[in-house]
Image (cartoon, rainbow, N blue to C red):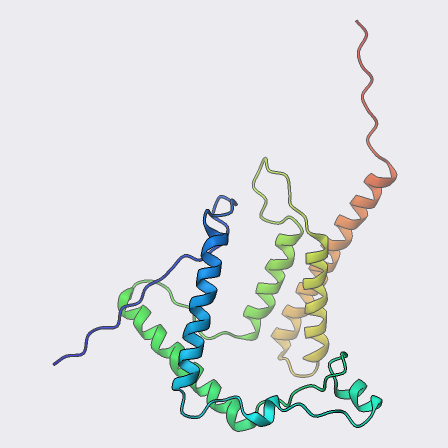
Amino acid sequence: MPEKEPQVTFTDRRKISSDGEIRPGVAESEAEEEKRRQAETSKAAAATAEPIATAKQVESVAPSSAAETHAGGTGSGEPLPEGPTAKESADSNAAYQETTQQLDEMLRAKAPDSSHLGPIVFDHLVQSMYMTAMMSMGAGTQPGEKPRIDLMGARQTIDLLGVLAEKTKGNLTANEQRLLESALFELRMMFLEITNAIARNAANPPQPQPSGRK
């Protein structure tokens, strides 16, 4: 007997509609969705023959000195748990890759003519963070609309890109390095333009127009 073709259902879980309004029933449905996810997670964990998390990972060991707590602790007096082993990391990555491949195959079977997301590369990460920072600084505002600027959000994203540049130094190709440096340069310059404009407006507020004589 032929196997039944797996059904893929897509649910729109966005909290904000395309018009920028909060969708009705979001607050009520979130609690139910969270309970459902917790139940599914518990069921999957119980059915797993060899769970990834081991007792060794979650075992709490008292630090032998204050220096040890400062060096490897969480800052609240608790030592950091040990990370996953190499085998656990490799197994989880293999399972993840297999699942995403199956999902891609089902999506292609359902919509063979539509475009599908290819492998994620470093460029995608930089471009995503670049667009996030640009949107926080008002990019994409429609004509006639007032720009919505989130300077703190933009600053955080720019700083994250700076951390990424520091941590990947010496490990990038020439094109990747150029892309990252260009993104950081453009974002920092735009951030400076906005903050300087705000400072000028604060120092020289617009004067009220004199009322006309009757």
